[in-house]
Amino acid sequence: MTMLEKSRIVTMDKITALSKRRGFVFPGSDIYGGLANTWDYGPLGVELKRNVQHLWWRRFVHQRRDIIGLDAAILMNSRVWEASGHIEGFNDPLVDCRTCKSRFRADHLIEERLGQQVEGASPDEMSKIIREAGLKCPVCGNATLTDARQFNMMFRTVIGPLEETGTEVFLRPETAQAMFVQFKNILATGRVKVPFGIAQIGKVFRNEITPGNFIFRLLEFEQMEIEYFVKPDEAAEAFETWLIDMQAWLSEIGIRDEFVRLREHDADELSHYSSRTVDFEYQFPGAMGWRELYGLANRTDFDLTRHQAFSGEDLHYFDQAENRKYVPYVIEPTFGVDRTCLTLLIDAYDEEATVDVNGKPETRVVLRFHPRVAPYKAAVLPLLKKDELVHLAKRLFTNLNERSSVLIDYDETGNIGKRYRRQDEIGTPFCFTIDFDTIEDDTVTVRHRDDMSQERLPMNAVSEWLDERLT
Ligand code: ATP
Image (spheres, helix red, strand yellow):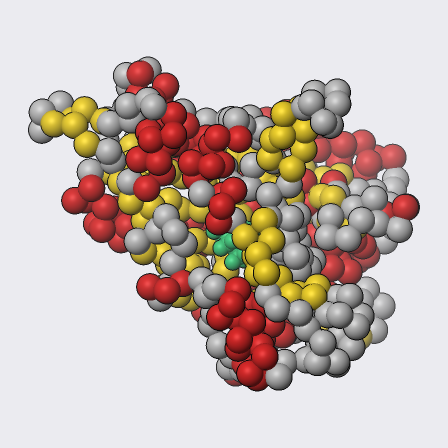
């Protein structure tokens, strides 16, 4: 554990508790006792998540001329998953405990217990390692683990009223495939030239054996993915450019780079479609440690070639400048939405010893979100719930709401110190407070979340002041 990690105040428990307390993320189906590993984004969580998606779309689609969007169906023809290799190869190696019936991922168990990286090893190889090391069940402690066997992670369902006569389909486990399947239609619209990318944000489903760690590993989650099509001999260079773009994205949303590192996959760890993969890892608190946040892969021409073979359609690209046909290579940056939200919460979390309005010591919890991702960009607060103050505060609130596209909060309940603490805890960067001086001179107090400093500003300058800080 590094010094930096030791001095961290944040824990997964604190983030989970704050998320529930303040309405970022609730346990799914909560009043029915929940459904393991499902979570619902509450009023603040949905704003955080939408900000992430909106910023991503803006940065990678709207602000670039070489990337266009797609929003494909979750259900696809099952042949897609045969071509992609998911039916045959999207498996997790599983071991069961014969005594307590707990179920684990063999590779995770080996990594955790023996510190050995075995991603990509066969079930037989993993069974051998487990046997030879005499690994015991982490739950009941008995040496009664079964051999490892493969378990397909795709969720299955049936189209049609009868299970027996219906068509078996899968809920997509990644958004990527639709972008390959629609490659021909996108080319046919005639407005793209290699290099170009297709971007998509959407829900995906994976029957994970060992989900957990709050919203880190979910059964259903969202991905933001780009398939970037390049000339085969330019793939290596495009890969390097994407590494830089992905890093730039992380700093734009305010994630501190001291908790981020890049990890190159070893040759035996690479997925079947990849010739090079680099994971962006984030140092999650406590026992979690370094885990994958995002991935960047060189998928070569694997997917288009396979879809060409399985569908019978010609998926070559005709390069006019070079007067030749080729199947483009694909560089794939992939970003998990939920892991982004979790990382933002963790990275922003801070506690500070301070004093309350009566001078009593207290701990101030503050989410130091970058204003770009903060659910509320500002809050308007009348100092007291007095008609003349409330009237002015509501006027400012309405005015800000009409003029800007960002979300502003309004709060008149409880004492002002408590209201500031609430805004700190949900990460609102600025508060505009209407007090008795406002009545006299038309100015408001601006209170800054990060250092609690205050300044005064003319009421009619507030909107522009806020715009400047958000752009
Ligand atoms: P892991 O090794 O953690 O299982 P992966 O390598 O299978 O992840 P990819 O298939 O590359 O992940 O998925 C792309 C991105 O989707 C990941 O970088 C991550 O941000 C996110 N992701 C993957 N699995 C999950 C999950 N079960 N819950 C939430 N997000 C996920």
